Length: 325
Image (cartoon, rainbow, N blue to C red; front, top):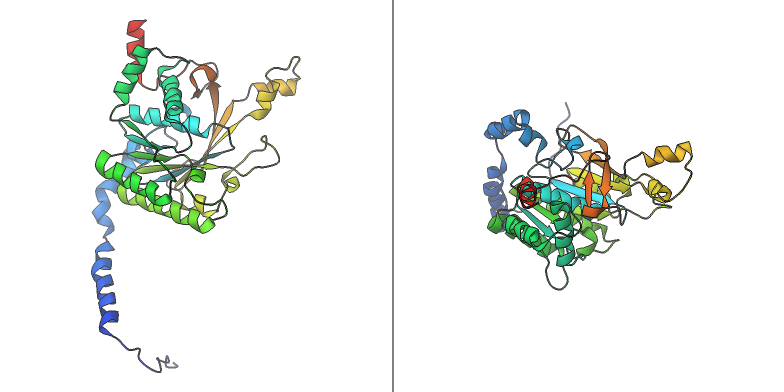
């Protein structure tokens, strides 16, 4: 067997070089963990539905299929105006009803607009009265916050806010709506990658579930189905995410709503759902697929079945409304 050639000269080992490797060793050796140290968490992941699937979405057709687990990053994407923020708001209310604490970072929408939409969704009507609104604000206190910094928002400020929310407010979910408002250029792919990577690290290290709203590239029309490959920006956004959720309105159906004398094919289109909710990636889950949702305009809700009443996102408040009726 031929001898393996060695270096012609040994590199000079200075005290600084040796100290650097020693520091790495002292820090690095603590990051090697026997897998058995996580045996309780592993057992829960295998046998506890709440841990395996996570906190559920408001729509029953998704239950036991996909949920929102700790330590994960989810991307919410869709064409502009197709209901991303609306759906995330409804999901946030449902999470609060499950005992979760939620922070919404939304530089795009005024605080009053966020509150009005949330009130319609939770109180199940277009214009809730003062008594119902007061009950809602009281119920949301300690459950739901909005982070709206003054001035230019940067990735560093968003990351700092998420760390603060976790350490000081014990937040379970941190929602960033949206990526395009975080001061990173559309063509700054390295900046996007770094920000999303740091969000994923933060979620993994703290247990917070981070939600990031993204946009879809403009296509030829709004009718064509979109997927995770159509998300605007660098492809590493979806590579780094644990989950990718896509919402798309049935724009063909919307165009036929006021038309008289529908053809059989057009009537079939009218029978389809108003919105398609798709799980296009679930890194740690067991299900990827789509479910149909129907939109109730009066209360800004998406519901799982055609013709059903608005859902009771917060049963306690619904019970109060019935008592006062």
